[in-house]
Image (cartoon, rainbow over all chains, first blue to last red; front, side, top):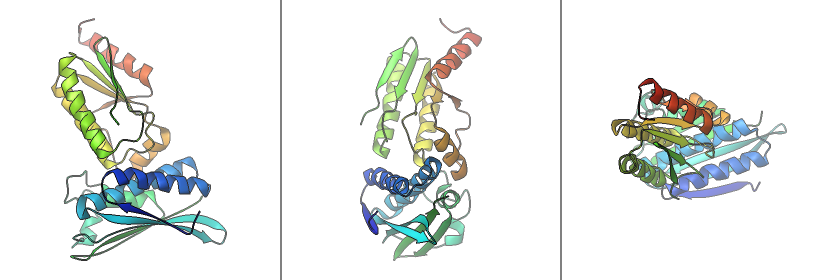
Length: 133
Length: 123
C-alpha cells in the first residue's frame, strides 16, 4: 500500500468509494473479513458525517506498522461548522442531524482507536485506527 | 443502480445486487411503496446478501421501507444479512427492531406464507 491514499468526499456517492477503498487496503494488509467489514462500516459513518454536516471534505488512509503489526489510520477531515460540544456528540443516542444517533459513539466501537477534534467554525477531524489481529 | 423488484404470487422480491448509494436507497424506498400498491403485494422480501456494509443510513432506510410497506398492507422480511455485517451492526448499535428477518430467500418466503396462513389470507 502506498504510504497515503486520499479520497475526496464531495457527495454521498463518495461514501461508497471511501469505504470500498478502506476495505481494499485492509484486505491488502491481511485483515480478517470481519475486521474489514467493521472498518468499512466505520468509514461509511465518518464519511456520511462529512456529507451531512460539512458538505465536503476528505478521507486520508495511512498504513501503520507497530513492531511488525500492520494497521490502518483513517483521518476524516472537513472545514464544516464543527461540533460545539464534543462530549455530547460522543454520547450514545445523541444526534443533531436526522440519524439514529449512533454515529460517532457507535463508530468508536468498530475501531481500536478513535479521536475527535473539532472547532466550531473551523472544522472537524476524526481519526480512526485499526490494527490487524 | 436501480434495485430489481420481482413479483412471485403476492410477494415482491427485491434483491439488492451491489453497494447502494444513499440516493439509490431512497429511490428504492419510493419504488417499493408504489409497487406494493400497483402489484397488490401482501409481502415484501428484501434480499441484502450482496451488501458488505449496512451502516446507520442504510439500516434506517430499510426500516423506513418496511414500515412504509406495512402501512400499505405488506409484511416485510429482510433476508441475507451476512455474519460480518450483522456483527458490525450490533457493534454500531443498530437494530431492525420490529422487522422480520430470515436467513435467506427460501426461509423468508416460508415465513411470509406461514404468516398469511395464520391470518387466513388469500392463497
